[in-house]
Length: 173
Image 1: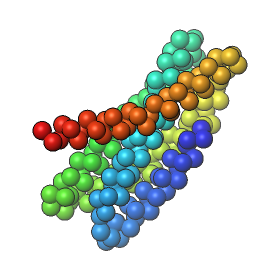
Image 2 (image 1 turned 90 degrees about the vertical axis):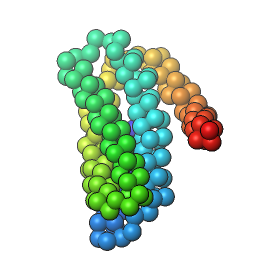
Image 3 (image 1 turned 180 degrees about the horizontal axis):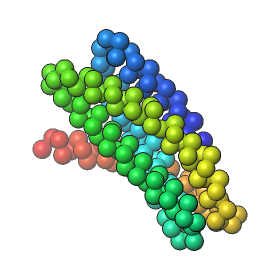
Image 4 (image 1 turned 180 degrees about the vertical axis):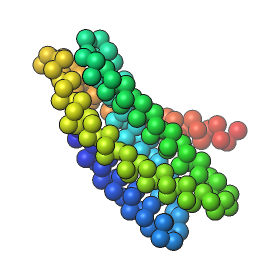
């Protein structure tokens, strides 16, 4: 849940930028790239990755209530929706750079969607799902999962830059 606080701060920045652009401000492609990098690397791969690759997999081994099963499926679907919106934001930015002025409205709409979407998603996790699902685990299981989270985080920087190097090598060919 600590990671949610940084995500919320970035969403505020994204919302402010969408508002600035909406009032006739120029699109800053570097800002869009930075926001996409943050959402993809921190919010999705790092944060959602821990949820999906560790927590949810451990929960799948438990006898979840129907409500908890439904909520977990909703969260996975919400992660998918966010990924699709980020891909659409990248696509709109690329079209904008090619001179398609209508892509500006699409970018601001997506940025506003992300800023409006995540608070509800975060609330669902913080106030509803996470507190309920802790009861499925004993203290030792929770400690082991926290260690898995730390290991996951430790690998992220290497994963990010290995992908960067591979992408740059592929681009050179």
